[in-house]
Length: 132
Image (cartoon, rainbow, N blue to C red; front, side, top):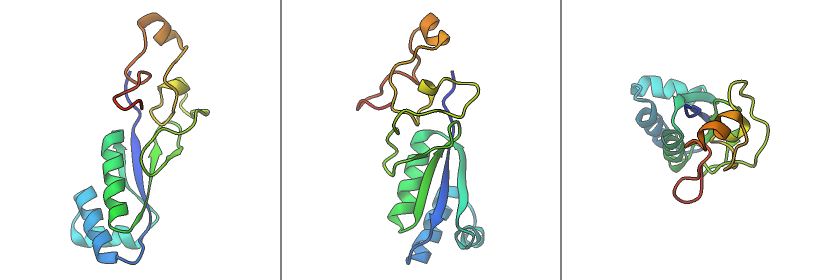
């Protein structure tokens, strides 16, 4: 099974515009001119289809520069907390995966047919630190 993808959205700029432009450039790899356009167009998506770890790191870099940033799950469309911790179990919008397989979820067990037949997947087993 594959991991869900996550997106990072710039939600606000704050008062440190130059630092935010530099952070956007570091996160996206865009030119200074394009980074400034993205900052001026906030709210805007900056990173799409990223692994959870990359999305958390990108959002942290943006927040450190004074920008507002959100991490959204590509499956369930829910917004994760600032630290990237899983959210309370709830319905996942994915039509392909059970809710417990969504890494945005706090569930650590699953009763789907796949897990019953093959055992728990890396998505439903807790990682180091007790999170998915």
